[in-house]
Length: 91
Image (cartoon, rainbow, N blue to C red):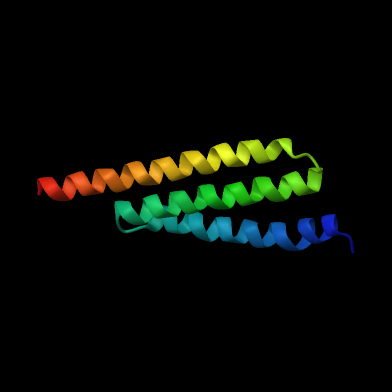
């Protein structure tokens, strides 16, 4: 069993299953904060999927896309935390 087979037949199904569970939490989340955390986790797992695909395709150009997506996810989480801080101060 080569590394590519291991990535395709073991790692990708585990990541896909985690994406399903995270998406269920995103839809079912009782509060907005839970949904934002689930969305951030979806993006993070998406970065992992892109990283695994980059290994399978043996093309490092996909890692640039993953890095940009991770940066966007981080900035959106910081912006949401800032929004929550401002909302709590106004109450």
